[in-house]
Length: 129
Image (cartoon, rainbow, N blue to C red; front, top):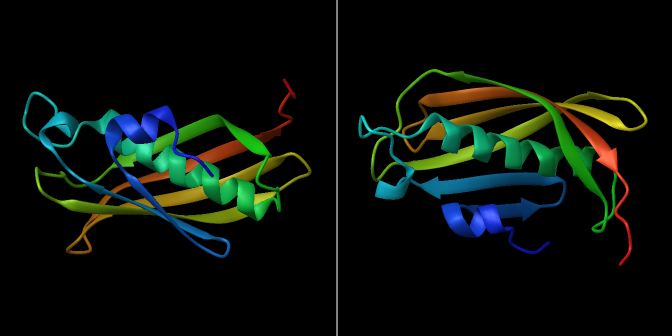
């Protein structure tokens, strides 16, 4: 799986082991909001990415298959600060033929829960060029 433009821009790393996927992000200046804390949009993006990867694997899709986010509800619980190492993980909850429900967590290196997400992902067919 190649790095996306979003991944390149934000600088997160994707780690795969079988069907498990995690994402890590070291919070830098570019990830902060005007209050000097992790911007909520960055947290949501990382949770969306890890959830999408998990949905693809849970649906048994091959490397060329993709999913799109239908819905993502994000809950913010703790602040992330400059220098923190965050880890995002996801679990598949239930699925249909083309829809997958996923829950995700974003934690600081001290184990504190920064944010959670619940997402619905739909399988799409990629057009050949």
